[in-house]
Image (cartoon, rainbow, N blue to C red; front, side, top):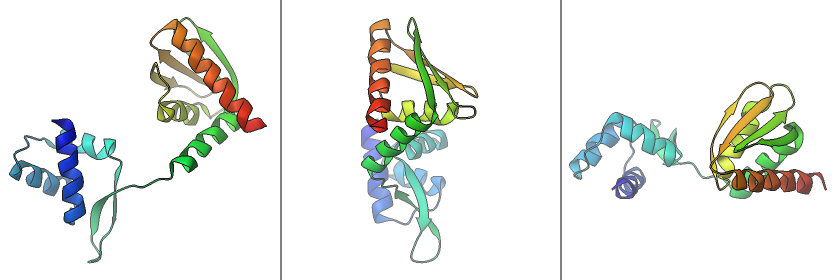
Length: 153
C-alpha cells in the first residue's frame, strides 16, 4: 500500500503543480487512498521531494535529483576530515570525531545505509551507533576503516 501511495504521489507531482500537502492529500483521497497530513509529510521526506518554482511563479513539489557519486564523495570527505577513531563496545559502534563534527558523521553513517546499523546518536565529538549484532558491529567498523583509508590514499 505504501509503495502504491508513493507511486501515486510521484505521478501526481509530475502531472500537476502541487503547492501544498493539503492539495496532495485531496488528490490522493480522490484516488481512494486514506491518508493523513502526517502520512503525506512522511512520504514527502522519504521520497526526497522538494519545492521548486513553477512556470507560473508559484512553488510546486518536485523530486530532488542528486548525483549518488557526489553524495558518496561528500560522506567520504566527512569521514576523512572529521573521524578521529572507531571503537566497539558489544553491539555499539563508538565514533570519535573532531569537536563539533559528530552530527555530520552520524548523518553520513545513516545515509550510507550500512547493513546492521539501527541508528545513531550524536553528541559534540562522539557518535554511538546501535548495531543489530556484535558481528555486524565489527563489519561496519571495518567498512568505515576501509572508507577512511581509501580516501586518504
